Amino acid sequence: MFAQRSGELAWDLRERGDSSTMAGSGVTVLELDTPHGPARAHLHSAEAPRAALVLGHGAAGGVEAPDIVTAAEAALSEGITVALIEQPYRVAGRRSPPRAPQLDAAWVAVVERLRAGELADLALIVGGRSMGARVACRTAEATGAVAVLCLAFPLEPPRRAAKPAHSRLPELDAVTVPALIVQGERDRFGMPPPGPSRRVVKVPGDHSLKADLEAVAAAVQAWLSGVVAEMAPAK
Image 1 (tube, one colour):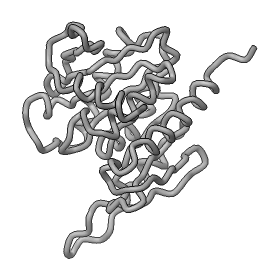
Image 2 (cartoon, one colour):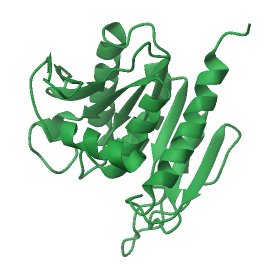
Image 3 (cartoon, helix red, strand yellow):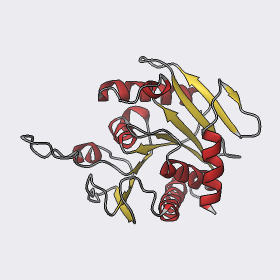
């Protein structure tokens, strides 16, 4: 089920357009100003949305990555509106990302714009793939997120000669809201540990998370369902 629907969403994401709903696609593409140039949001609106999920891409890939599309479909199946964000450097056609402060500033500007408009009054879950997950973690407090979804979090960058090992675990530990990390069992960037509010789900495959998209979908959908249920007012 998820493979077929993800394929349809991926086709939608290959389309490009200005700030208008694209005919037949169900996707609204928005050009959003940031301090570092225009970003692009692909907005997939759920009917009577229960929350919103904003996802960012990896360093060298786009929002059409299979695990991002799969996570988006899982969210939509839970009645969660999804916004997939292209950072300004990608919109400008550059392959290499800028430094973290620039990425974070652009991300916060996009989220603030969406929360003031299309995602107004919706509880916000943020996340992303690899680099996008790092951005979401670093800015979770600034964006007012109620939860964070990390796809293939790059815990440790590849070792380089004469340089000590470096862990990005502090970025995860700084997240105080519920977090889910979906990580490939053979991810070359390592396996993050669980934490007090952090759940880690191992799935078959490597950093791409392409080996078992059904497992990715199941993990994301189950976690999102729990997050939304906890936000619901008690009867």
